[in-house]
Length: 462
Image 1 (spheres, helix red, strand yellow):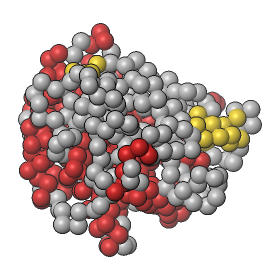
Image 2 (cartoon, rainbow, N blue to C red):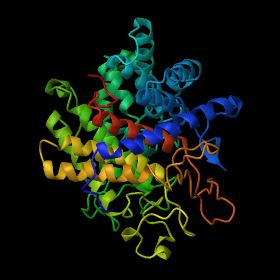
Image 3 (tube, rainbow, N blue to C red):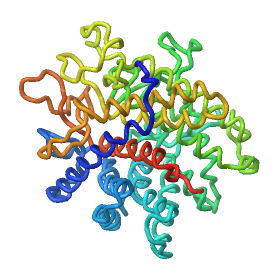
């Protein structure tokens, strides 16, 4: 991608205002029209949100979007929607033992509401605070209980595929463990064993770094620094690593860009959390390569930097990636990395949701490095702003009031061909996804808060 070195947070404010004006209409349209008996809205088909039963991982993004809209605009109608729907429909996601998605659903709802109360943006209420905190404590413990130990002393929260499966997506959902730990909670195991949630977060992160992220050290014939594999497979008979895999990418040896974006943003965001901890938080933990706070920060930073460089190097000039950097027909687009992304090409879809996620990681990485390496910090921060600048305008931002999606040209599952291909087109385009829209709102709010000198947008507690 080509980084716009002239951009700053102030220059993006008109686009952000336009985004939230469009966002308001779309949230209300979905709230009016969505039939709960259908399940959860996942992606649009011909501009209207539809469902796709696989896992219920997008409901928190639906209601969380209303909470973000209130945060950005102070329109109490959206706060009312977010509160009402969280109470009515999110409890099952707190107790859900079958998925790795707790951070997506519960941080977006209970977590955002608790954050707003902590910031004083919503009225302090003791019982309401207790409600949010209890939900987050339980969510962190339930998520941490979905655990596989492996042979090298590590372990991970396993995906919905089963105990053998480590997903890259999960690195952003372990935020629930961080908040639950901050709230003083533990996972109670057999014989009343108190399982430390911070330790499980760090073990999972180290397993993801070790097996799902590449560092150009010759691990296999496709080892390029910063490349991310969607899934790693383990032998549960002895805990040994077996192979890379993928559910939504093209192959185990190519990079599904949304998985890569989860890694970039997950590690950058959790680096900010690690910086709030004390040395004594690590004294009773036993995590390889992370015996101390400094070692943990070094490891997370190493991973985030590798992912960031890969993203910058393997993305079209506008910072909006195609769905997989090794997609089989990308070569038919010629030198696609030296051109703008083209959502209307005839060969491979772009995935704007990957851009919405990754941009926040680039921005946070820039903030993290501001004191240690100002030059590189500015590069990453402006890379994130460049992605946002291009995402918040046509052909990606939708202002069409008849279309319920906010950010167009997002895809869910290209190998399964789940995404709508509009009439007259050859690949999926012109549609939105619930996570793409949520993360675009979150990205816009993050930038808006910096420009307005508001409290820094973060998931963890002060």
